Length: 352
Ligand SMILES: NC(=O)c1ccc[n+]([C@@H]2O[C@H](COP(=O)([O-])OP(=O)(O)OC[C@H]3O[C@@H](n4cnc5c(N)ncnc54)[C@H](OP(=O)(O)O)[C@@H]3O)[C@@H](O)[C@H]2O)c1
Image (tube, rainbow, N blue to C red; front, side, top):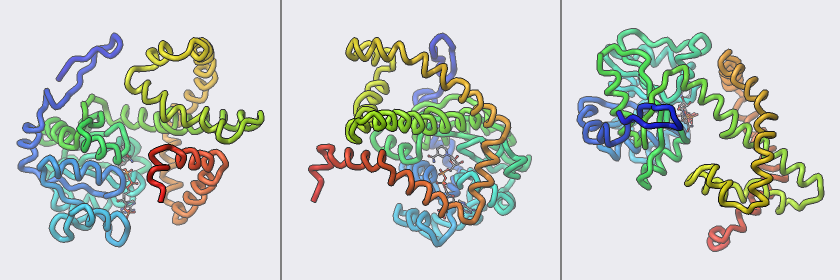
């Protein structure tokens, strides 16, 4: 454990220096990790562990694109690729990486496939914390652990390949074997986490649901649209509105913020931008604070998870979602975005 000062608050974190990959490999030597679900997180975690020398099998329902993808990634039907239930039976660490609605739907079957001493691993606290909605109540004779990468499964893999890693939180909900913590950390290091920080299942799901609905996606999409619409309403061209709203953010500023922080960004822009942005930041903060309060309440009360469970369980959900996403994609703003992206030099060079 390294003690790190996060702005005056000391927290413990674990990196591959405190818990080495060799230690992780040694601890996982006796384990078979069954990755159930080959959607977004499944491939990232499974491939990273496999490349790290861990015995990995995949459990995926047959007949769809995810099964085909697992085959394309080198998992062999009947050897390292099985039905969800069969993989759950064969694994000793069972990574439950179906969609959260899928976890609830499959739980009655998966539960039957667990053996005493297995570790049931989640990458989200959703199923366990909101178990009155999901029905996921793990038996007492298994470890229940969590490693939640703070990024998309696509980045879990991409960052592993470029050597950078994704930070993950970790938690133990139930320690049946007395080895739950070391199994958690071993898995966390083996999937390629940059560093691991402790949380609880409850804190993880509450912060994660808030983050993705808030700054990471929901709020970001909302404020982008508001500014784009404002500029368009006042006669700015789509190219200008998109560049001032999205392109400059993603291609320039946010990369600098990632490297150096917002304080550096304020200190290293024009004085005109600096003065205005410093003056307006508190106004935006105060304007959205009440919406964030509503969001957090909706999360902790279970309203948000209920909405996900209900919406995602309807038979025509994927069709409806596609319509919703097509509407967004065909909006002027995101069509303008596609045109702007196509004009990036690297994309122009690749044009046939
Ligand atoms: N997305 C991320 O990057 C991310 C980040 C951090 C944590 N997490 C957590 O990681 C877990 C997995 O998330 P994900 O985004 O990877 O999920 P996802 O892409 O939505 O995964 C879908 C997977 O679940 C399977 N599935 C869905 N419903 C099913 C059902 N009823 N029966 C059997 N299989 C079913 C899908 O199979 P088909 O393809 O055949 O439908 C596919 O393999 C979740 O707990 C999520 O909260 C995700």
